[in-house]
Length: 196
Image 1 (spheres, rainbow, N blue to C red):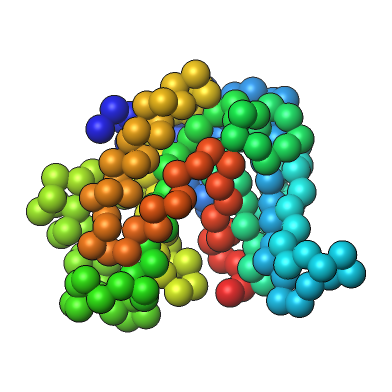
Image 2 (image 1 turned 180 degrees about the vertical axis):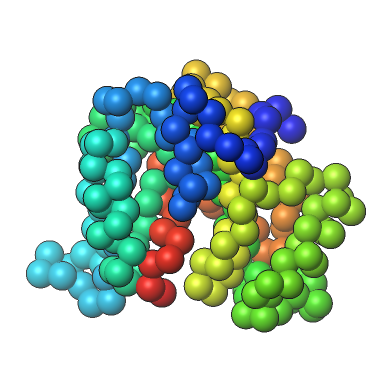
């Protein structure tokens, strides 16, 4: 598929590993990530969503703070500017696939709310269809996130390969309700452990 995936057993010296998010941290200390929140009610400006860039040095503090906030989201990639725009992506460290299986009846054996520890169904689907097994499987609240962690952070100059690999994974997971709109570089996903 183009990019190597691996669930590491130990952290590599060159690339710090965030065990909570199951992702490598970039080696560049001048990068930014985005945290966001879906608002239940529009704010004074009528917005139902807000997001804010943070410096990589704030990662641990912001991550810990966001755990108790409803509907918290984090950027999929790292940015070299304080902006969640695709052209400012500096490093890719994983691909995630959002399975909205509650929307689809293409596979009646899948009960998204009952998947729980029964993720073996999903892993068997991967094995049977020659799809790499995900590094991590998370509940997204009403569906499933699959994380594919790279062996090391991938520079933005490889974005064509990144996007082609992401689209191919999305295509392969169509029977599971893969959200086909989740391949853009500036995407955010629900923070594991945040309240839904």
